[in-house]
Image 1 (cartoon, rainbow, N blue to C red):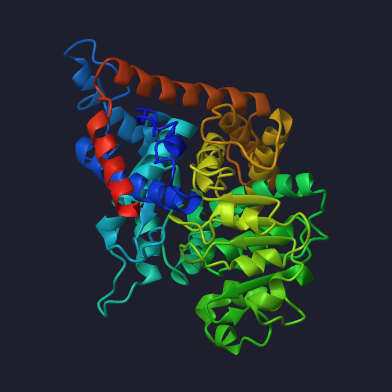
Image 2 (image 1 turned 60 degrees about the horizontal axis):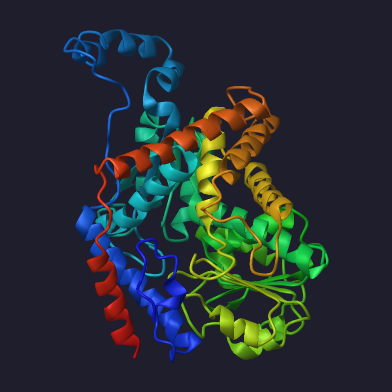
Length: 484
């Protein structure tokens, strides 16, 4: 057992040599959770607000605030679009959640989602050069029910302070109505990352996985385990990008989706699921056992595992099968188990396994692209353009069965993705500004480099402390003890 490094790069090597793959997988999960708790406590969160303008002398206070700033207010009053140039609005995202579906932990109360929403803001800044604010709100009405209309009203009221809104961790069916209404009624792009972001990166991973398997998207049989916001949107994007809906089968907690699911038809809140009931699974296959037999692709975003996806289901799949088990924090089946049952390519949502299919490589670039052209909305075409951008980037630098999509460490992928999304926004007619691909690329590249260099400088100068090795070692020792 090696001593753990500050970078955590040797995470797979620090567990006892007699640990099984299952013990190591469980140990890593426990370690990361414990360390996250300790690190968040040490830093009191992970986001702060710092000025980006200087104070060369006392009178600059009068420039940045009263009386000078009065001119900024009246300019914006006379032309609201000036707010994108005279304030930080043009590069600022609101991360809005009612925290009713936080990762795999369900309803965590409004403030319970703050850690995740701050995490989104952290990644937006470091990976996309985008500023963001976490806004966790109470969506309960006077009857104690989570009301989508309260979220809609909140976002519409605060949209004038932001360049875009990232919706996060809102339970279904409320998430469908919230997104669809706000996309049409807001003047800025409203994006549901759990749905659109996850769908974008999943499509990117599948594009390259199918290349390696030498299969075409319109030929393959696809099973989606779970029919929440993520998988229903994934299904929609896959079909839009060429998948044959007659070869797509989705499962929710009550069984497969098909045109006889009167329970879904009767509840108008689940209109997105009903659309898929009438367009997919025409054979009305009812069980996972039957659906998985000779299936080419399994995409699971359901209940955290392991053992949610059965080994025998994977064993019955077609040659060169593709398994995406992306529940967080624990995949529905561990990669080693899926590989043992014959899976050709396995992906999860976690970065400590090969092939992390996670929206963290999607939303920073997508939102940056939308902001640079002041898009009015983020279309499905923009999400698909981002997926192909990610897939193309990975293919050009080389892909293999354990490396199908870029990682968050590949800084150069984000400006390319942002530029490709910006061009699609212009093509779709939702952009207020028209710029060239090169202009978008260079702007995104500059802002991302600035964000990363700023963080590095703060670390080098001691304004951001290094995490103590003691809390890392304590978390590791605890995880090992729990697994033994």
